[in-house]
Length: 101
Image: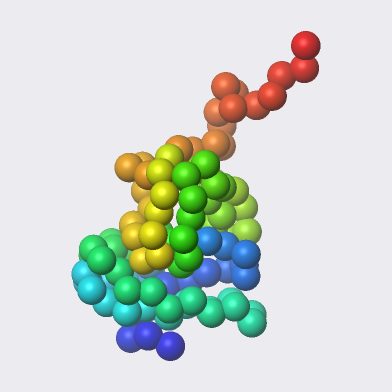
């Protein structure tokens, strides 16, 4: 495992959460059950913030703790910070719910 702590709760999550500040250019390994990802972070990640553990395509769901929390607004590379600049939230968005006619 890496010297820095991060958590990924479900094997199908595509992001992990930093459990401490992680400096830029750090190599971080996260694991859940039989799935393990090692990524290099191009930028510092603050405590509690997310980073991609694998490539995430534009329009793909962002999955954290086994739940969809939003959608990628652009392609996101492994190790990249995932936040409001590249994620659009889906929770609590009435305009994102399909309505029956």
